Amino acid sequence: MTPALRCVGLRMKFGDTVAVDGLDLEVERGEVFGLLGPNGAGKTTTIRMITTLLPAPPGAIQVLGRDVARQRTAVRRLIGYVPQQLSADGTLTGRENVALFARLYDVPRVGRADQVAAVLDAMDLTEVADRPSKTYSGGMVRRLELAQALVSAPQLLILDEPTVGLDPVARDGVWDKIASIRAATGMTVLVTTHAMQEADEHCERVALMHRGRIRAQGSPDELKDALGPGTTLDDVFRHHTGNALIGDNENGGMRDVRAARRTARRVG
Amino acid sequence: MSALPVAPPAASAETEPGPLALARTVASRIATTCLVELQKLRHDRTELVTRAVQPALWLLVFGQVFTRIRAIPTGSTPYLDFLAPGILAQSALFIAIFYGIQIIWERDAGVLAKLLVTPTPRIALVGAKAFAAGVRAVAQAVVVLVLALILGVHLATNPLKIIALVAALLLGSAFFCCLSITIAGLVLSRDRLMGIGQAITMPLFFASNALYPVQLMPGWLQVVNHINPLSYEVEALRGLLVGTSARLLLDFGVLLVSAIVMIVIASALLPRLARG
Image (cartoon, rainbow over all chains, first blue to last red):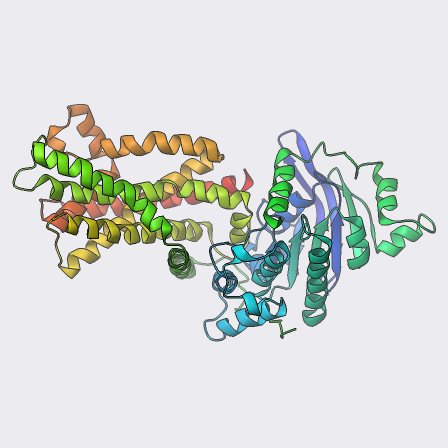
């Protein structure tokens, strides 16, 4: 069976800065895969190439067997995407936000309202579905965005830093929902984060990314065991990258930091 | 937890859409975005009121004063009647020209990325934005027209003329919305776009026939007026609303072609904007 995602020798340069440097990655169908690294590691650039937002050379990325460069529309129909920023429209109600994406993904008119209601219910948002989303808490907005991404029944769900700026309770709520989505649908989940503990708890396999390259990959337990007892995923990361997780943001531009701060402000 | 949809609801397109599929998608996305625009207006009507202040001042103060002093010769048409379609076009221009700022905000908030990841061609996204600007302009036009009626402007009530008026507003707004998105795609920052937006809006307005007849303009301004789509919009609106002479075929032709050209240019710049 073809993997959910295959990247081969993926590269991206912005001027003189190499954001992604020969990245090889394979995500199996049905797994929760974490792409980990500090700001500027190249995670978001990789995600933007996978999601067709940045150009990729032919043959470099395949999503469920479709070439991202040649079959963009087919790939877009297969993926659900939640960006790092809180991107729900605050003026619209939760139901209207989800219905918008149902229409944009051509969910048939017959049954569309039921499908919208089902994903809202799955995200525990039924009671607030007809309230403007600007009245939602940060965790609720994140769950609303998951509902927007799920309404088209994607086969690969891509989440870029889904818990950034959330309090611990809301963070757990988001991860619980990701787990229940996977259990209910069997869809593949690709998530980027720089929170090692969260990845350790919730991802089946992870890849540690630093300066555009994958430095190590495997299950969190495999990676920790390789370094000996009592090791955390933070230790694994430090082992492979030096102290990159702490303070090494030379590739993480102002925009990354601004985006993270803006999201944090919006979730309060 | 409710049962989540697990199968793709629509047949997955394995190849890129052909011209017919593209046209269908464009129409569908325009309808969707216009619906969303109406939903937003329904939830927050304050914008309709606040945006009505400026056209109201033009009609109430400028229009009434210049009607009294008869400084601008408009033939048998009272100056207020002459002015009302110009203010209608101006109000649509002011709404549309700031859509570029909205799209930069959408980029910064991740909304644009989310939209671009949907199976929606870029041209459909821009076309949808263009018509959404038109929907807002038409909603605003209702407010301005009611005000004009209260002030005693003699407006046409022929339903066909009203439909044509809506079409002219939609096309004019589409052009200026896409001009704004094009500038956004070039300058990439909200601050720069705000500066340029302010710098071009008033010249576009003053270099049109919105406030005075073309015959009163100096020669160089008449040349600018002829290449300014706002002038064709105003001429069409004036002909339809107050019955002055208008070259409707030419007016609608210019508005249609300029809107299509600008939609294509703005679509080409959308990926640059998303990357910026």
